[in-house]
Amino acid sequence: MTYDIFVADSDEEILSCFPAFSALRPHLGEQVFLSQVRRQQAQSYRIVALRHDGVVQSAAGFRFAEFLAWGKVLYVDDLTTVPEATSRGFAGALMDWLIAHAKAAGCQSLHLDTGYARHAAHRLYLRKGLQFNCHHLALDLGRA
View 1 (tube, rainbow, N blue to C red):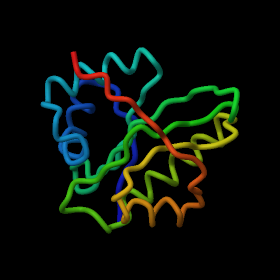
View 2 (view 1 turned 30 degrees about the vertical axis):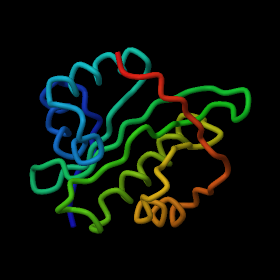
View 3 (view 1 turned 90 degrees about the vertical axis):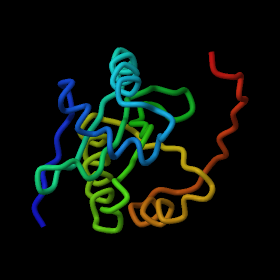
């Protein structure tokens, strides 16, 4: 299977990723998505996407960060595939790209948070060598 992986920089490239992101983040409309991505890019957020047959099938949002606990890490904010393209290896290919990108950037590790019920995603992450090693806690302060 042939596909290409690219970092989405232009508005057109970012918006081409919206169908994949809307599967994971259905609360975001297209224009809100674009403006939020642009704001997050000022904080080092990037999108990498996998295009097959001219259409983005899978995408990931990521950033580099440094922590006292872990050192320099590549943090995966989002990893998503359009529903009709799941189980075709696209997310796995993006995970491989993210892991290689983290190594090339001198990161000590790659981190992500995942929902408890996302069992198919967990299987992928475990196959790629990730381990469950902490609980992520959050306090919802409401949306402004």
